[in-house]
Image (cartoon, rainbow, N blue to C red; front, side):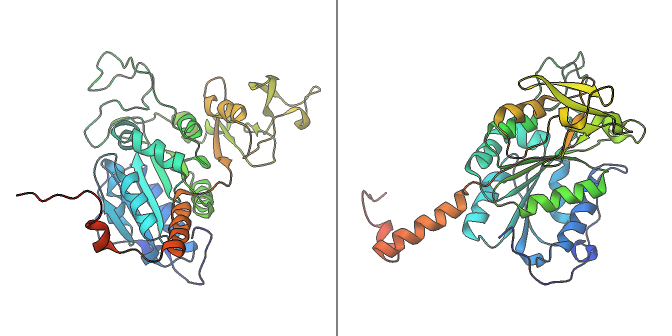
Length: 340
């Protein structure tokens, strides 16, 4: 369904609800909401064919603000609900909106199996490295040493790397963007919609109340050119304000930053490959400041069978062989008993 586009003219206003948006002033969620509403209007898909599913957290309010179908479910279980929706009605475009706490803590088991199964569902992970709704505890993506209300002397946990986790779970589409990079974020959401299978998009999102500035080096205009690497399939890994630095391999899957010129040219640099091997993907996942820039864009995109598609094919094959099912007969077959 993801690739099907109908001839339909919609605007952002068609996806705005009458609900008061209740996020803290300055929250990065506003920018993500606006970008999503714009993109959904551009896809040409009727509003009744979108479903937004959320769990618990600040991001979970998203379904109230999108004039589509939506479910505000329970903590960490949005992937289970979304899977059921997609299998039951494959014509729906199903999106999960979640946060780093919701999806990577109590929902960690659900999110990895959603990606492993390659259900045709899209995931937007709002990552602010903090629990915002419950007022500032450290989260599964909080950096080591993070001082919060629940870790007053600094966190001793090792944080999750959401991109590495997605690669390890076998996600067929993995991308990263930033809340306030509207054109880039919109392009990323477009790409996720067009993918057949699980699309996992990590979005760096600022929580200006409980974790302000955690992504300052990639969000601030005077810094981000030196800390961001916008990857594009088939193009060399180049970054910097003057586009004068790049990534080359010092050894297999051991990257190094080099300055272009003095005998170093674009042909010496790594070329981004969305279908690259796991060694290359692991290299991208581990690249972090200050030694390396942060890769953003579509990091991986491959075509693989989907769980929901496979289930439909299996049901059709068995129905052709055995005929339509009989629910009443099934309920009274096999081992049954009467409870008195």
